[in-house]
Length: 228
Image (cartoon, rainbow, N blue to C red; front, side, top):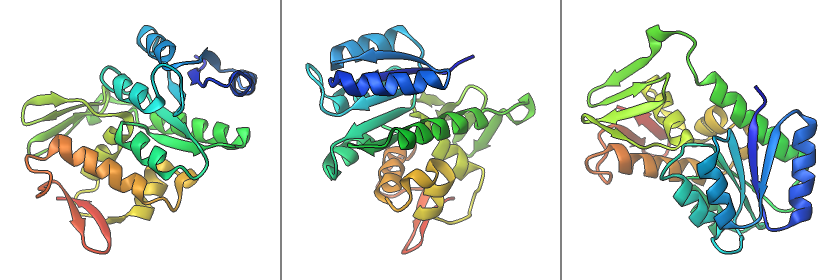
């Protein structure tokens, strides 16, 4: 089945260019030009990925991303202004999986899209005998990508789930931020350690009883993170 992509930007020429390029690769592409339209489409259809500009009419991109996260784990790539660090951080805080800055090369955008889609496919196990991963009070169903903590299901974004499953599959091993970026985000985000820190913080808030004193995802001072 071809991948289904939603492109959201109020600049119609940008949308037209992205849409044309992705359709050349056999993808199905819908377009939205403001935040309200984006939310309506995201609720109505099951997209494989959403490309979402930060600066949008009616509802801004970060708010759209936050609202999407209330009902869907679909991967979201935020499009930010050049060197707008706060936009990048806010996008990650509100549940974006990746970001790219304007002006961008369409080939770079396509490479990121394909990398995210490829990792989503590879993350799905092929057999049922590895469908459950449980450590203490946390249990993952790796086929449905659902997470249970202390007997209650919790909502995770696609990247938060990937990060938690990776940690739980490598208990006790310390990973630097650079290693986590390479494993879960690929080379497209190499060097931006804040991406890892933001996702770890959000994940701790969801799985730890006391996020300021974590018992699962722990910090190795001056090195990185590990799952205990």
